[in-house]
Length: 374
Image (cartoon, rainbow, N blue to C red; front, side, top):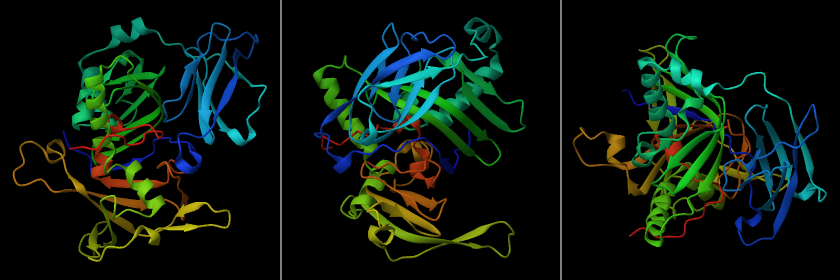
């Protein structure tokens, strides 16, 4: 299987921001009712969660819910099988103390699990393996992940030649034992173009920590989480925001891609040998927002951790090198936040090591490193 060398990271992170980045700030109550649009009756056990965090809850038998959240701006997902889901932008600065009422409309399509099971054939399983590799990833964490309800997946390699498209009829549940989470992932779209190895996926994840871990297993999981965090895009954006990329182990260089006159449509990479500081990538606007702004490409080397054996390939020889990635801004400027998220989830094109790490290496935006790796 060819390893894609780039991925347009379009994981919907939302506008999730801890003011000051401090988990000790006051908790606020986000509450309301999820109801049927036609009847007005509460929808029992509907799922309500803040995307890309550990904050989520199921409504009670009357459709009522209550969730404690820190101050900030969020994307809220409301979902129930048999209904069309909702995505709601929530700012705690405008939080309604009386609560909210969300009305869901019945879905025209209902999942028939029995029919899905009957129709599965060898091609379906081959497509499933491709989806696992390019969605969950082939890292140590990715290959340990397991789908708990794979029958909700709709795998389509027929409607467009050379393209695998995947959607899900319900929230996709993923067990990640290495990082100690279950992901409830609302998959919006997945697309894998076999010819050029291009991968695109978009969705809304909720991280549910495993509360059954022993003390020893919890310590191991914390170390694995920190290892996944170190050198990640989340880590990089946080360090750019704070202006301490060098201290955090990142070396930034400018990369120019110049058209190759001998090969139309191809480019030649020219790497500036002189590192530069994160301050050259950001500016504050009149409102005090931190904006990421650069042209061309940024070559990123993470020096605190070597690339993994899985990334290089077990059959490869030679010493492992540093983790190397490339960033390209898809717009003129992009607001970034202290927790490592950014305002437009479609704003950054990532290539290299960071792109190779997929959903199996994701951490929630409220994650903060606690354990130092020996």
